[in-house]
Length: 223
Image (tube, rainbow, N blue to C red; front, side, top):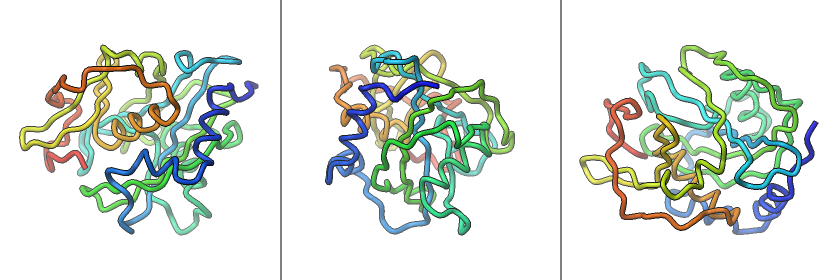
């Protein structure tokens, strides 16, 4: 059982400060759409620094109508039976990749971010996984793969770029191995790492087309 590392305790304090979380979603604040929640789940060894933390990322199935093939945080729509966005994020994480809510400590919640393509307002729930376990895809309809990424790899300037689409949309991206993280997930990651004070200078002039594997062809939208 791992205690929350000091770097995440500091992040939790930031999340608790009025107005701090607003900075993360300032470019796409919630618009009163359908409610959804995602779990931004960190894990790592005792006393881990930011580089040695890990983060759970899923790949959406390629046949989905929306966001097919994209990398994302575990999560989904808030249901009537969910008491809160936090409960919804934990339920979805269990249903998608088997994360046990009893092994998770909540650190804070960001304001909702809007997703034009789906009409959802997505609330990011930030948490510490004190008892990590091996993960596997449970919901094989929605999810094609689950990954645990080292935060240090996400912070490496050579793994940062700006994604772009042919019609002109663009935003922050993370390229780790074969994974290309863009869209809402890239946007939230970029803002959260900034809020935590972990971001290293990187070349925001580096524009890259979203690879076919991670591109939702039906809508061709980043939002």
